[in-house]
Length: 400
Image 1: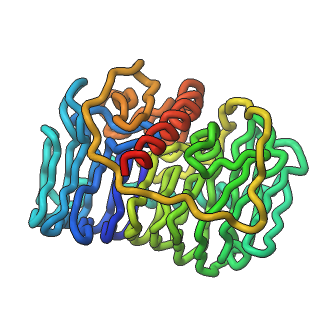
Image 2: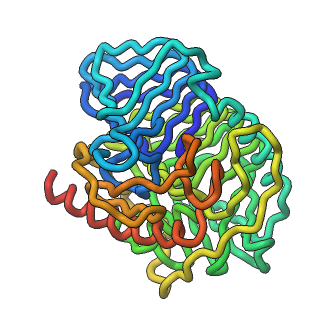
Image 3: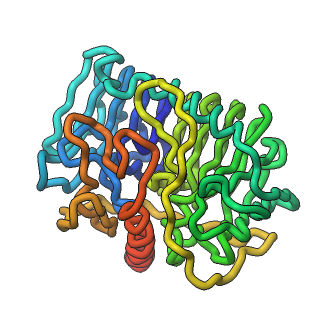
């Protein structure tokens, strides 16, 4: 599952796309201003990890509303494989004043929340349990917040392949530059955010072991996105402002989220999610830290992360003074996919064939059924996806 909203989900203004499986426990509203296309499932560029063609890509427990002038394009260009396009489930009614394009995928409504969300109905409880388990882990490094920059520095060995940092929500609030230093090559990163202070950040620069990784030109864009998870266990409200790239997954079981920045990682929020930026996107990079995030609400402790690729020679670390944020332009409607090796999706300006799936499930198969993890070939895919996403963005800038 790429994005989970435990409350409602709304798209307004110029938000562009949501990659992978989108699950909304409450109502979902798509109302772009002044109209236009919002892609779900298969997108213009991203990780390339998504449900197989014909499978559910949008599940809504309540009502699904599409405003006049807005087109919601599900599984665009998926014309080969076990099915076509992407499926839609709505527990309530579908108010289609605009256009719901499933590209051959099945659409159902009025079947009730339990049926529409099956097998994801218990996912909210799973998110809470995993957030609590991760929040209990001891830090393995230091955190320093000063002048809008937060620096996470490893000072000890990884705990089972995991580097753990801790920061108060009040100290994270207002940050715009994030620097990760001395992170072991085989480690994933967990940032535990403590306290009940609302958090509002505008991501403008991210450094990882000396490389500037939030730019599409970075060779380690996807790798860094897959390595980092922020666990906001008690945060009541989360705002990702501006138009830059947030690097890493988000786990916020008690928060509602307001997004104008693009997210690069999985987003699991217990409350409402509103996305309303200008061409902002959510990309489905799964965390390599590998705790089980199954759809049944059975608490599971974190497990040993899978090894990640060794970073290349360090480059330039972002300055404590944030640079100009990365801009976003609306994504073009994806074209027909090219075939790739099953289980190793490769994104591009025209995203590739989706990830292999486990039979009988509606979750993208990423190496562990119904989990929040990728391993082995999946990690390599992130690195390849980063390079191809960079090429896609360059082509977009030349074409706009």
